Image (cartoon, rainbow, N blue to C red; front, side):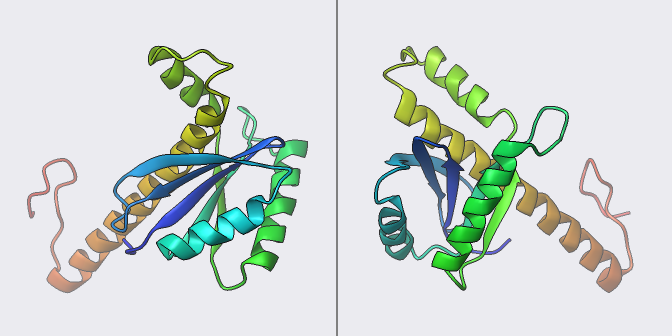
Length: 165
């Protein structure tokens, strides 16, 4: 898995949830929520520079049926704007299904009211988006390692125990 900090974004119409991961890509943590109508691009640039980010991961709102509707199209347009503003920095979209619902539940279980937790919900949703992307990258990396092992050693590894066959 690539080493470096990634930034996760939950692009809402009122707030932009922001999360980051550690350099090893092990843990995604919520950071903040930026005002979507304010100077969030310059605030994001400052954060990207501070952490020396290697990538931005943006949640794409896909319906439960797996379809991309108007909201997804709007996020894709905003991703295109981000790519123009931050050339050279990889920006990818990932399915954000259920991340806001999970964030709402986590805050409710922690005793926060919906009104007092709005900004936290967006940052938690961004962390969920980033965690999904990191887990996907870890799975891909594990498959590549297994494939390389098979090619080099000529053996196979038992999937559930990790023992050589």
